[in-house]
Length: 300
Image 1 (spheres, rainbow, N blue to C red):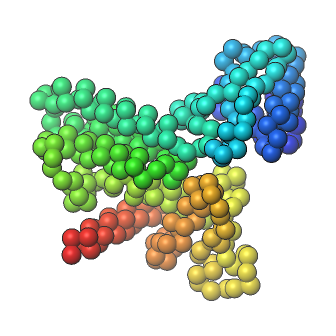
Image 2 (tube, rainbow, N blue to C red; image 1 turned 90 degrees about the vertical axis):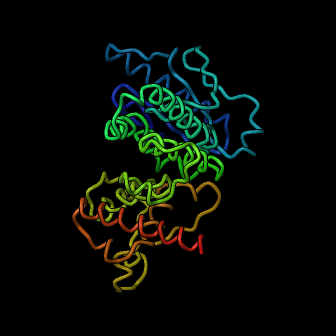
């Protein structure tokens, strides 16, 4: 199917999910372009004895809120079938909104966590602490983790606090604590947990490690440029750190910006660890230590 799509469009394929992406400043031109590409794609599918299910096809226009306000209507016409723009779409299990804020995804996770906790509390008397932890990891933690590098950085501080509150409720459930018991790093560490912010950072750093040691898909490396490849420096720092990109607005929420920032902030002794499993262990210890130090400073 990729042969039917022009090179100025990006085609994303995963199992039976297909997405066409096109970027331009003029929404009307985007609409016309995507309509042409969908018709071309539909013809290719028919020629190969397949069909495009337009009833399940959705479209969404991404952009800053101030620019989206000026777009009164956005739709795509494919062979006479009108596809109206949506405020959000679900792609590979993630709710993506028009300004890529991550808000819809975060609210969905909070709702799922609270719902599953209520269900498990009804069965709590029949469950051991180990079983409660296993169920929480399987039914709750997976939602905090899934694709968090793509949405967590963009959400508001209020939503980040709500996610942390949801994790704290989970810890209280596992450890049979009262509803007002304070949850600090010590309680999280006793279960082998990191708080939400550090868990996201840990997963980002795992990706950054794979990028640095070239064990990741090539497309992930596009914006990761080592300092010695960009400047005529040949110091230890220039070999192991990346050029921090100049960013503005929504770019500060991207994986590559936050991944580079987190990687450069790590001690060189950890960045030098080639083995991924050992790296994960050292990163977790480092993040726990940093969190404990921060808590001590707040108390003092």
